[in-house]
Image 1 (cartoon, helix red, strand yellow):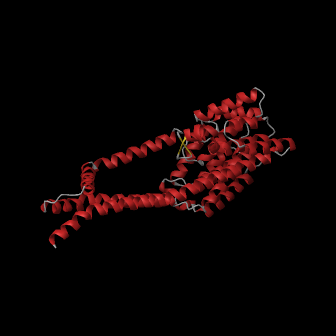
Image 2: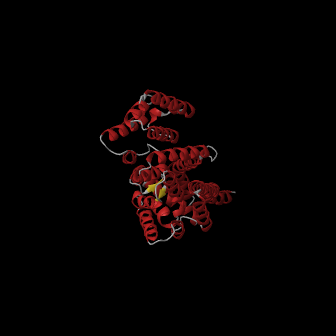
Image 3: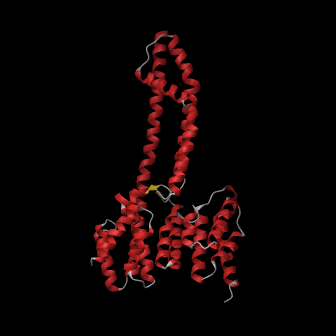
Amino acid sequence: MDKKPHFENLNRIYGNVRRSSSLGSILSFGRVSYSQQVALLRILAIAADKQLPLIDVLETFGKDIRGHWRYQIMRLVDLLRSGVPLAEALEKIPYVIPANAFFLVKAGAESGTLPSALSLAAEVCAEQRNERDYLRPGIGAYLCTVFVIMALVFMFICYWIIPKFKKIFYDFNMELPDLTLSIIHTADLIVTYSLLIIPVLLFLLILYLRLRHTGYLENGWRPRFISGRYYPRLIAPDVLRFLHVTTESGRPLLGAFESLSHTTKNPYLSARFGAILDDIHKGNDCWTSLHDYSLLTPSEVRLLQSAQRAGNLSWALKAIAKGIERRINYRLALIREYLEPAFILSVGCLVGIFVVGLFLPLVTIMDALS
């Protein structure tokens, strides 16, 4: 079989993706963007579907890129060349594909449906990238910028302005309000321990990266006990999509649940999937078991049971997964819309308390002088 036309198609596809997402402008800064991750996922899906050698495909892909992104791709090539399976190699390299694609890719590798899993993961991640364009993606950077600017202004006032105020107050031998004394005491503590701020921030950054690398933070921000213990619906779309891939390939659902029980690194989810598998072995309906362990609602169970009887199970699994994900994203966006003004209001209240505490003694001084 002649592989050259396939490689030319891959180059053309990647070239279009790169031009449309302006990848070349950020490659040299050590940052892997979501668009780059989706582009790699698409190429892996095409290569797996066409049964092309992954090492050759990735080396061809790596010729057109530079910087940190090229380094990540070459690491992936080295791991594959040393005999590491694709799913494990992707897991060893952080940020090489979208975080929400790892579960589906690994589950697909465990069940022997990797090409279909890669294709579905690429499709889902591409849709999520398009949705991000409408969800004000700069809100995190905006809030961080506001916080940093306010912190710098506050530290400047504590270091330079408040000592001047203290001298004025003490020169007049006046009794200060409790609020003013609290602000002065807080400012003294900040100035005294200001040198510890940078080490503490570095420690928090290292801790965050460590927790993310070990998998404790799912999708880069969510502690795994949230989806494992308190709200397993967060993982329901990935589970249903994996069952969709299994159904499309004609494999039995029992094997899919066996793969789920040892695919995830989340011990809480692993225990939950193990309990679901035990229920299925006892003869219980798999959809009812998913409902009993808080992954599905009663209406979704009825829809899946009806679709299974009608022979439309694969379509129903994919549609329900998308519906659950859309509702979760809507709720998260709603929470964010409430948290943003709450954050700004909290900062405003702190500024107001700070200003009132400093200017109350000045009003007293002006009254005394007049």
